[in-house]
Amino acid sequence: MSTTINDETATRSVREELRAWQARSPLFSRPGFLIRRMHQIHGFLFAEETADFDVTPVQYSLLTALDALGEIDQNSLAVEIGLERSSVAEVMPRLQGRGLIERRQADYDRRVKLVKLTRQGKRLVAKMAPAVQRAHDRTIEHLPPAERDLFMLQLIRLVEATNDNSVVPFRLPQD
Image (cartoon, rainbow, N blue to C red; front, side, top):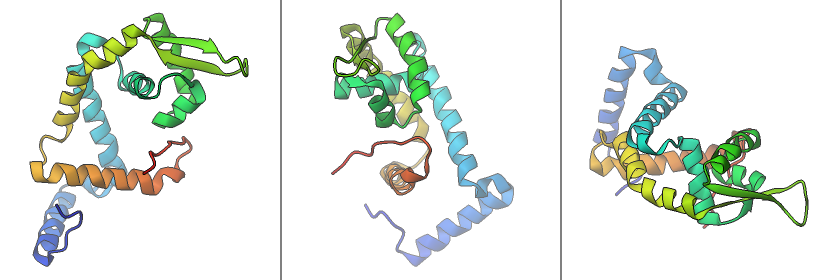
């Protein structure tokens, strides 16, 4: 699959369709608006698909990062998912209260909080995975199948290219 539009006819067709949408509303000329709107839509779909689990998208990101990384300090965990440290610190007590994570002070520095998933947390992550995948699939289901991978690739490229422009760091996976 090509990752760019090289065909002049296809480029013209895309431009014409884009202009038609933008003529309907100036909001369709604003990537920030469209990204925020898709975030709202995905949040609704996530909540709908995962309602039985009482876990937010941020909590799920934290849980899945812990599942992949094992025990890690809270500040590094924040960087792993691109979330503010204070937000992570606020969410951790709730997850701990539900028995999904364990926290402890690091032996090497008492100021550092280490966190890891409990067995119950690991089970929840595994149990939620199909529902979460349905939410992700529903988020992009209205794109033609051939365009979904390209859309995802374009989002990744944008995140990678602009990652340093954020006040909240996100550790991009390395090759």
